[in-house]
Image (cartoon, rainbow, N blue to C red):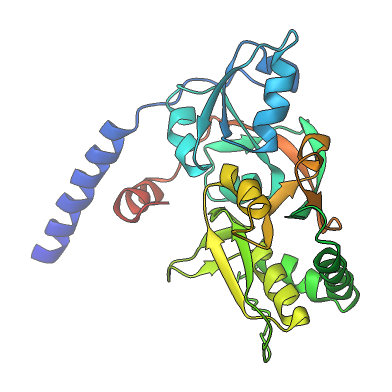
Length: 278
């Protein structure tokens, strides 16, 4: 009985904490891409979502952009009304929305794009070898296994690494972009792009070193020789082609708009998030 009373007061206290720390979200005012005009919009700095938003902003859209280091950092500002919407690649946006009913994705996309790895110009031998590895990865069904695991799966698929005798293959990435690249609960670097580069390294028979850095620094790191490749769901753009070369495309995606759904989390989910984080 005493234990039950204590549990009741603990839950009551937590409920007050959750209720006080997170007030009601303002109503959503963005229902289409055209509604983004003159709105406060969050983006991850250095991404194509930011670039497309800036390009649209030169016209009648005139969005008020705010840059953040990751998607997770934008959730609370959106729910509190400091942002009206978030722009993101669709796969990480879906992962975010699936875990939080207070968010939803608009049906209309801002842009469709393709993903590829980046490599310094005139590295044709390495580029050809990486492209052959990507083709083989698809032909053998490994790519499908990776996608099934990291997009709506158990996120446990690991590409095995065989003997490696060549020079270290250094790959730069950005580890705040699930399900492409992120740290799991064991602080292990995982994700679909991680498994892709593991496959590439194994195909090349080279030991693998993955370097986590800010997204905006990856292309410079590849150009300067600090890394051989960059894999972090890079969108293929003409602007980037002036600086680096792209591998063959390995995925396609859309830039989507995340807004407030008007729904709330359950009482116990709110307590869980307050105690353990999202």
